[in-house]
Image 1 (spheres, rainbow, N blue to C red):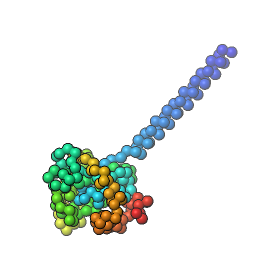
Image 2: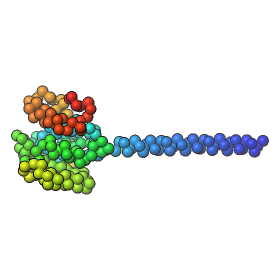
Image 3: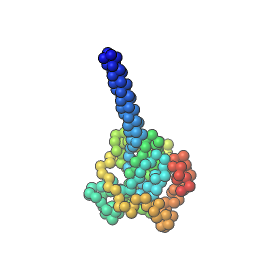
Image 4: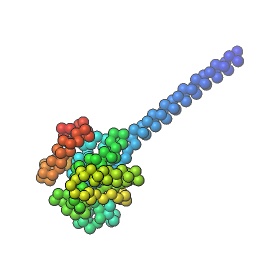
Length: 220
């Protein structure tokens, strides 16, 4: 009697521990999958006025977030007015958070080369000054090598008539710009600058890079 009872208890414990072990493994695998799915990377790029390139990358598949800001300068917490003076060393940039499972850093750069003029030193159209320079701020050695290779290929294939002057430098600081600069185009579409400068760039981007557009942004 006691022997049968002991065996039954043992079986129950074995079943219990088996179920617990399976449950723990299930949660561990789910957490691991979630971690892999949510792992993102960042890219920091300057190509003239940050309003323009922010509007474009916000419409790119795999891009999770875009912040306009300042990078490459010396003083802490610069203001827009200080950066516009051209004396701080800062460039207007955007910092992109993206999912590398959907879009690679190399593809981020492929878009970058085509949405601004990387051959004009410290200038984009009528925007003139070091704050408007073409620059890639890499976050690690891998990004550095990808950026250097991407630039070399442009020059080798003579994509542009003039030499590419884009600076490639390590990211040492990034300060998010004032709130009114964030999502500037979407919040100010009727402004003359948006209609005359940004909207045509968006149309060009959609024409040449339609495969990169987020589905809900195709007609935007």
